[in-house]
Amino acid sequence: MVTSGESQARTLPDVWLHDNVSAPSEFEWPHPLAHYVHQLGPTERATVRITPPDPLEVPLGLKRISDGLFRIALLGYRGVLPWASAHHVARVLQAGIYSMHPVAMRNAKRGWEALASLALYEYLTVDIAATPSERYPLHFRQMPLRVRIAELALRS
Image 1 (spheres, rainbow, N blue to C red):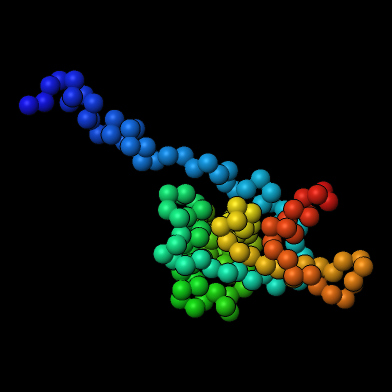
Image 2: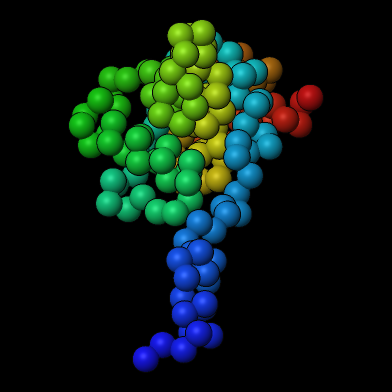
């Protein structure tokens, strides 16, 4: 038999609070440095290489991070990622996480920020061929996207 005190503790909203089902993510979304991805040059954007995670290894419960990682993992699992441009991946993230409005999909700005956020939080391996340095003007440097974004952030 249930007493009145026990029935009050087992109401549905109390269960949600005590089990912490919708715990807030500890990550700020998008990453504070993610907007620097818009300063990448056309060559840098064209040479982005994404290494997708295994779909079964995507961490769950991180809201937008989990959603973005799962979308990229599925692109890799279906064999789309090797031929897809980074802009195509940014459009997929834009449509899945944010808005599919035609004006928003044209540049996929928030999709690029989502891709940069996943790289900056080190959940995704994204490499680029960065612009040449002054010392070696004919050689593009292979580097992680998060390192290039940090360089751009230090310049501004």
